[in-house]
Length: 252
Length: 215
Image (cartoon, rainbow over all chains, first blue to last red; front, side, top):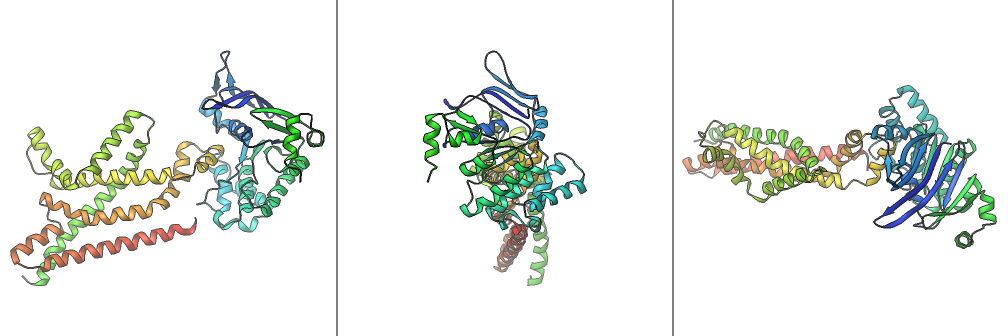
């Protein structure tokens, strides 16, 4: 079990965004999280990556506790150093890419492995070029982010996350900021990663993609998991009325 | 007095003006960053103290501040006046300009998109590394035009050292003009300030261009 999230509760100013959510992700599993805006999908990812703190619940990576909850229901985070060490298990790809604009594509990919993980320069450089090749961007290594299209920037962001050798990769609506004609190239590389058995959790609005790529689909609404299971089951024969209603809005 | 004697007499003043200028930048550019970070401290007391400091520095004339730094020790503690004319001038300029630079830095830091911090955090950068590797280089680029403005103002503000009878170029111009009943020293001073600022603008434009390799 790479990621375990148990009984996660999160409120923003009295509004309960996550109500007792539990999600586990196994090695090699691809999980898509779908649901309407404001259903808590992105918040769940942000809690998993410690960009938001949970109010209560448990989070473990590879069994190592990041957050535990006492008998009074209050969350306790691991010490800052322990928490930073847990970051080696995961990577996150943002909706807005968030590349570092003052670094070249190559430096965007190599900087964290070099300065944070203190890995060998030649090895990191080789890994980075290999990843850029995989993303179809080897000729862009010395470009700056502003010189790239949105789709290219997002692929650099994926390479940057993969260069850290995460056990699990989170995607927070990776194609939502892209023009429709650019989403395909990003979805293609994610599909390729799925074929290679990369463990991934993908928050997305691309239903055909989620159906094709996932081992499991989680439908969230109102801060709870309404339904989850095999993509064919969830998309083909949803059990809950809310799921049916939501999926119908995507039928055309 | 011939033109060339005037010019050579004033050249010493120009050097002193340059001295104030460079020492002020040397002190206030880094001090401004310290002030800025304290201004953003999580301790409310520190923030309040720094806010009051900035407010006084910006809210009162620099000329008045210079007088306070120079004569204050005498009026407050009856210390003998003198001996610290130049240090008082530099101190006055540095703490004044640091306040302005601090606010410029703050505006630059606050304008950074939160996504830059989040990307760095997820990649495991420490707070210090995030600041020095990711945030600060981008802030420098963003605040350059505002800094240029401030530096140009500083060139002209050096003339306020006149208040403490320090013989920089403006004081000398006034002295020579009075003793020689001539307008020429003012013209020389004016040309000097203009050329100095032209050089500042030129240098800053070069730096801006050099940072244009990314957007």
